[in-house]
Length: 417
Image 1: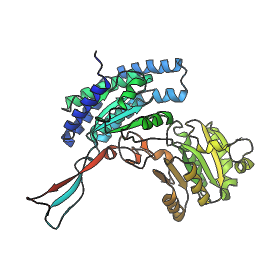
Image 2: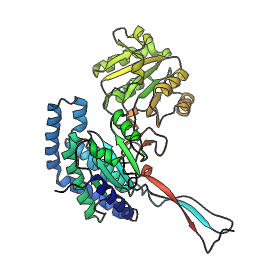
Image 3: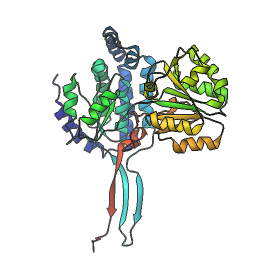
Image 4: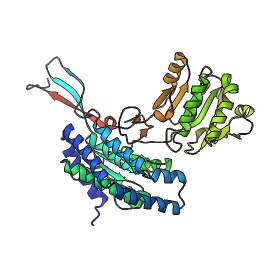
């Protein structure tokens, strides 16, 4: 099999993007349905190939967190299919009139949503990114170039080939979805130079990968940096609810970007609440690290260092700090946080509104688990990731976030005087 060079792939994607921009919502939704059906038809082959790569990852000494992210079991596979089908049900993000007016001379002016063009996705370990990225890009009329990690190369290639078959059977261009099939860093380095053909890059992975991509290209990058997520328990919080939210935020899935990493407890409720929290976290095998004041209440936990406050653990570790009121909590979050997801537990509308106004993060949760800050629970269907940027997208990156706009003017022989 001949493997296209990155430049050839980029050129093909540019041509495909122009064709995609003219497709109807009906055709793109049909393609998404056929992509899911095509994946389902090769399910066992995907699971078998993935099992081989998971075994190899274990033999190579990869961490359990990495292995878990790499693994596709029946539940994960069905989740991947459901995301494709759900994104097809979303309203069409294209050709929406975003603003418009008729000027005094009768010139009709408006701006409408259009695709970005060619999206390059560079990611590590998670094969579900392959299907999520393809789904979101097709829904929004963008051509996509996929470049997954070498540890999942065979899985990702099989996923991509099945989706390509489905998309083409629905009448989409052959190169609407492409995957770089060569392992190694050289292909990624070449993709970073393709600014003539690629409109946006979206890296998904560790901070090192994202930094290398952002600093190594002239192509605009939508960045997905650390998820140093906080939950502040205010003095008036319902204790049962506070414990449940803290446990769910941390323990529901510890290795993801919107999992809780630092818990802030108001000093006025710390004495009663901290023993309850420790008991619940102990039951979930979470290592606690606390500030000096926290250690006075929980003397058998480890001390938290300055580094702990700015660490995304992605592991069964949680740092706890006692704060003197909401102002100190907000100051701590805005100083140490990554602008991803932060929440408050309170019965006070005033405190909730102050927290929401002053926290500079992509998602702010009021009396809700930080684990809810994603595409599915926000009703976006499938998303590519959660951006900690402010330009071009912020928060969950779904189909709407992969559009831009163009200005259109209808005249009747109008001239500039």
